[in-house]
Length: 555
Ligand SMILES: [Zn+2]
Image (cartoon, rainbow, N blue to C red; front, side, top):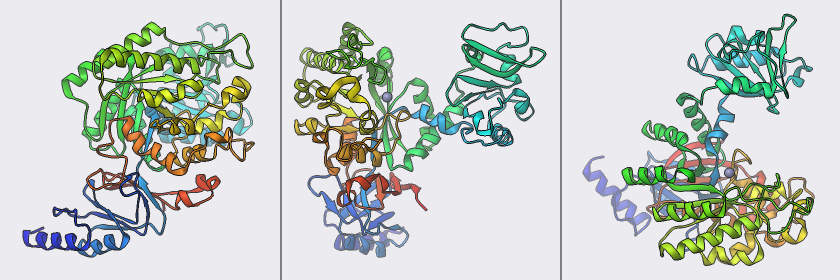
């Protein structure tokens, strides 16, 4: 653009739109006719947005924004048709590569015939480098009447790749010739207790190994290659973009970070990632941060993830009182209190963010006590301690989240999933402060919402539906399970946007739609605040925009 034209455009912008706009941004994308929910308390609602490059340039009325379209004819003009526009959703708890692997490997679950099973494996093998192990699959031989597959079905279509694909229940797998050779499994291999090597008439393995015999192959299966990690990451980003997610906190490891950094270098990230690493290696994170800082708006590090206990479903959540259905058992902490304290204290002294999984009331109480003590000992700073899941909170601990500035990072979908059976395990009284969204909110805590994908779907619209209705998946609680803990749509939206940004130290650049913030935007086909709550999960994401670029569009 030449200088004179730039000056004219600046003038048009200033008069037509927003007097706060002081420089000559090239407008690249405009959204009009929208119900814009901004998460910005100074301007909660608007009807249009203008984007220049990767940033928001203006949030205002549709009419003002539409005028800009004339001044910038090359800008993409998006008619939201009265639908809702929100900040890009932030999923504060995902296991991104595990989720991605399930999407990126060969898909066999619905292969209906042996021919289809073979064809899909053949096709997939054509897309990976020689030597790459083909795993996953989730095949189901009941689809074609129950005949178990054999290596003979697939050896000729997989001459260059070991194959070790599992049945969908994980209790048996099929290995091809290369995988059996790598594991030295042959007619002379002895059987193992609690497992089986299925053999043909001449004792040669057919390729099917069951239960404990599967360890023969598992032992020699190499860790996923860089190529497969990269594919898993790409699959995960695409999948969440389709659901309106523009940022995640990934509970990952150093391998995942390497894949994320490769994608960053290749400029192929479409999800902004706060990559959290395991607490046991806190020194490695401290040294990495010291060496190269905490990253940029795409990839950020500086969080440590630890575990205080297990899960409710497996009766490994640490509770004060025994489980209702197993009166001798009250779960357990998976680390000693001394270790949890030591890690929390040392990680905090190193300036890292402590993010601790705690589900049972005793685990939550223990970790809150540790947070309180560490804050006293280490002094005041902006540390943003997080408790992940925070499912079953003792009533007396609810106000402590706000008092201690501890972020409850919660997954509302789990509430409508577990809500089908949770009272059997903890009884009605304890259920009242289970997934206590409303009590935490009223006490002043800053909620952050997420999914725990791959464990639950990474679909914020389902999470919002869950938090707002608390209707369990079996539809047995039409008015909501523990309805006192329901929250409003806008509360749930905040937890999926500005709350998630805050939980990852990102609220300065994202989480709300305001001038100067990153243009991470979602277009939804209806206004979630004005429809019957039980229809929220029927809404569709129409478009997902990350850094001003459309990364998903529904057709
Ligand atoms: Zn998790």
